[in-house]
Amino acid sequence: MTARATDRARYDRATAHLDAPLALVDVDAFDANADDLVRRAGGKPVRVASKSVRCRALLERVLAKDGFAGVMSFTLAESLWLARSGYDDVLLAYPSADRSGFAELAGDAKLAEAVTVMVDDVAQLDLIDSARADGREVVRVCLELDTSLRMLGGRVRVGARRSPLHSPAQVADLARSVARRPGFRLVGIMAYEGHIAGVGDAVAGRPLRSRAVRLMQAAARRELAERRAAVVRAVRAVAPDLEFVNGGGTGSVQHTAAEEAVTEIAAGSGLYVPRLFDHYTSFSGRPAALFAQPVVRRPGVGVVTVLGGGYPASGAAGPDRLPVPYLPEGLRYDPQEGPGEVQTPLLGSPADDLLIGDKVWFRHAKAGELCERFDVLHLVEGDVVTATVPTYRGEGRTFL
Image (tube, rainbow, N blue to C red; front, side):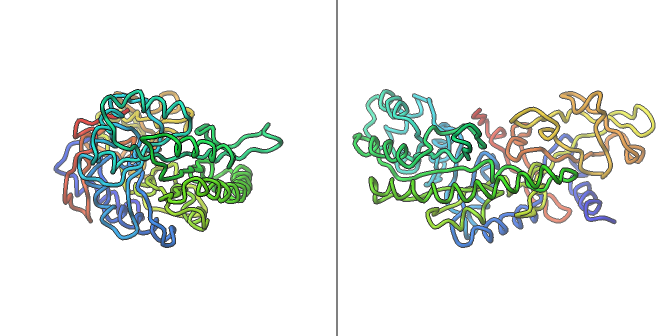
């Protein structure tokens, strides 16, 4: 029996009393992935990206481990909710235009101390000030650096379109604007190198593309390490008490941690290890989060139909954004239909061994987005469900 077949048998036994659709997290795999992130971070603390987890019970589990410290959130409303729930170090990874949220933040000393907001434009400071109402608490600010690799005089650009702040001078100018402005305190710098951390460099069957990605990423790491160090020097000249410099992501943990200028690493997807993180030379994780759909039809030889399953991931639309049928091994989508919102036909010889009501296990393309489809996660240890915990959605919290 293969390792995957063994996992399937465990998951089927653990959830035999549960009807699909359902989602689970393999706790042993989750913990092993967490340990691997800490190992690769080389002694620097790992800040957990909540967007990739979206379950408070699992956030608390990983934060209880040595080597993890703080949360990287994805909306201001989520940040405030976490802070009110007792999380005392929440870095909002994206700028916000949530005026009511900023009014709440500026009016509550506990929230203002726990939450750090992201800024890359003076206009964002203006918006926060306009939203303060009667709140006079000092707002903690982090500046985001654009990490994109620019070549041929800027005519070629590789990387996500995030912050407009690319050069040390640009970041230092905004740092001075924050320092001069009453009601704000500059405490951090963030730089997320998505083109390094979030792009696989060992895609099966695509050796030329994989080699090109590795060459690009090597060049990008060299350029960014030099520029990030210069940015940190320039900002520390303005704000000597800077508390943290955040960088990295699941696919680049050890490379980013090696930079002296970086004080902490961000990671989250590496806990669940969705399918987009299967193709890296820098690490190999264990799939920890899966969802099951029930077989509801047997249209013919070599075909079964499961309920639902059409849960595409965000990003540029394409086959890599789709979930994949994972267990039993050997199932594939009908190219004429793909995964559907209400039903999904699956092809392959394993279909002939599946009965009505059996579970087919899938892996999502991304990590936390799976939790927008399920109210709870069943935590499996061995072949037993040891706990059932709510996702953000299960707690009535849908932030985007």
